[in-house]
Amino acid sequence: MTREIPENGLLRLLKPADRDLLLPGLQPIPVAAGDVLYEPGDDVGFVYFPGGPALVSFMVAFEDGNSVECALIGREGAVGGIVSRGELPAYSRTVVQYPGTLWRTSTRTLQAAKEVSPALDGLFARYADCLLAQIFQSVACGAAHSVEQRTARWLLSAQDRTGDDAVPITQQRLGDLLGVGRSYVSRVVSHLKDDRAIAVSAGSVEILDRHRLECHACRCTDAVRTHFDRVLSGVYPPGKE
Image (tube, rainbow, N blue to C red; front, top):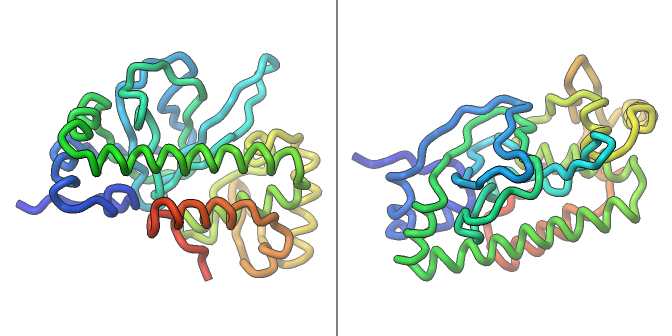
C-alpha cells in the first residue's frame, strides 16, 4: 500500500528510496496553537516535520519570564535532533504557533536512516546550515529594524508558510514573539490597519493587501529564502502573490 507523503518540503525533496527509510516510522500528530514540544533541558527524543500550515517557533526565555522568538519553522523544515542524534538537551522552548499536523519520528530512527543513506545525511546537514542562516538573520533583524518592519515581516512569513490570509494570533502574543510590549505592537497594527494592509479581529490578523504590507516590511525573509533556494532548492515556500 502506498503511504501518504507528508506535505513537508524536506521529505518531498528526498528521492523515493531515501524517503522510504523514514516513512514507516513517521506518525501524524495533530497539534494546536500553544502546544509545547520541548522545554529547555528536555531530552530531544523526536524529530517533527511540520506538514501543511503548521508552524512552530523556537523561543528563548529570559530571567524575567519573557521570551523571544529566534526562528519560525513551517513546512520547509524540521524541529528536533536533526544533527545532534538526539543526544543533546533542548536549548529553547519549542511551541506551536499555528495548528495543523506534525509528522513525528524518533531521533534514533532518523539517525539509523542517515547511516544507511549519505544523501539523507547530507540533506539534513544542509538544512541545519539554512536554519542557522535563519537564526543569524533573525538576530540581525531584531537589532537593526523597526517594530513595524518586523511585525510586517512576521505576518508575511506566516502567510507564506500557511497559505492562509488570516493568522490566528493576538497582539499580545505577537508582541511576545517580537520581544516588545503590547503598546508598541498596537500602534504598529493601527498604522497597518489605516493603510488597509491588514484587518484585525479577536485573536486574528488578516492580511488584506500583501503588496501594501510588503512596503512596511524589511527584506529579511527574502534573504533567508534566497539562501534556502541556493542550498535546498524548492524547500522554502514561495511568496504568496
